[in-house]
Length: 523
Image 1 (cartoon, helix red, strand yellow):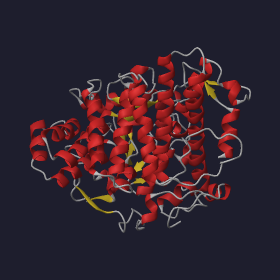
Image 2: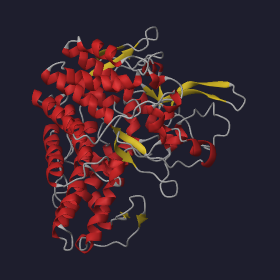
Image 3: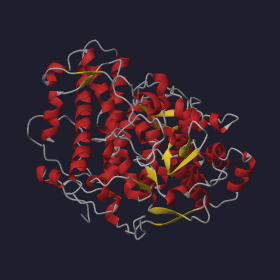
Image 4: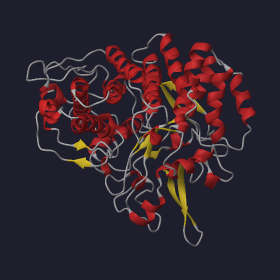
């Protein structure tokens, strides 16, 4: 914790109040000197958007290591990475330890706690700053509380019990903090999110229409995710957790501010191609902001394999770092499901100028394909749509089914998502198929749709963790998914999952620095 305190007191990077992507280096100043003006308050909160959990979707160190959020996909065995870097390889073959993954573990742990330290300082000091209106004070505090909660949510999902630090660390006393149990951490996450929702005066419009600042809908979406995660393992909260998840999701739905993008008349005008190209839509709940001139989007570099590049691709170091395995591809029905067809969510061939189709043998993420970046500039500028409205509909469908049964409301939310993908199937057919299912059968249909619709949202291992069920498919029957117990199931390399793999180890470096820390079982 001393390291995090020193890092923050230096306040190495401050972000301007109008543009999170513009970095304004400052000389080192003390905390008391820094929190004096409204500009200081705004900068301290703006910095949270690009640190810790706010940087979870950025490349950790380089193209070769992928994005932090991708590691859970590699751990699931359902997503491949073509390179053999040690930090990726040990995750893919389940040989990760507190030592051989220490570099990445250190980066994640320190990055999140540094962001939490910043949030704690902002929450403590902003109320005393003169010149801020009450409304702006509450909004800034709500944003700081949101990011503190968001950081802890990432930590508790990935590491389980973690130290809960809620006050700024002053001096060297109390810097060694033991782990708090996961349920206590979750309760604090909920408290922060509820405070932000109830007291922040946050805008109700979607994130990109609010100048890419935290909105009420974003807070309630994360709150719904938190309750859904708590309802499952390891907390196994009461049924009320599902009811609370349903309530939070319904609040987003009933706000009337969000809607699914609809398909146009041709595949080229599909909703997925709108998502790929359009920056401002009512489907987007949380975007990671990029700008070609300041902080460019690296994702377009990942849309072709290195070994079979389309002619004219401008990236020299790009490759498909998030490669769906055959097992994952078979979760989709290739005939009915638009998402798996070429140049929708994914693509597997390109056409030359002469009209020749060149197969490259992989399903690469087409949702990240930015035409100008790939073929003209080599610099991406589109935002990453990290959380979208289908997530809310699927949370609502599952949570309602768990607490109220397979109601027409629950069926309708799941049908909304599936109907867009099965665009040549009448919606009434989908509704009829879902309406006659038992509770468990229906919930598993929701899990299947999460696998498909959220395939590029890095949710797969979160779902395995909370359900303790591992999805399997069959090449002879694509579109069908079976769920088996994850413990004892084998990944695509034939290595069986153990209980310990559901959490990451805590880095051996962190345990040496903080004698109060204990290691996760099995490591």
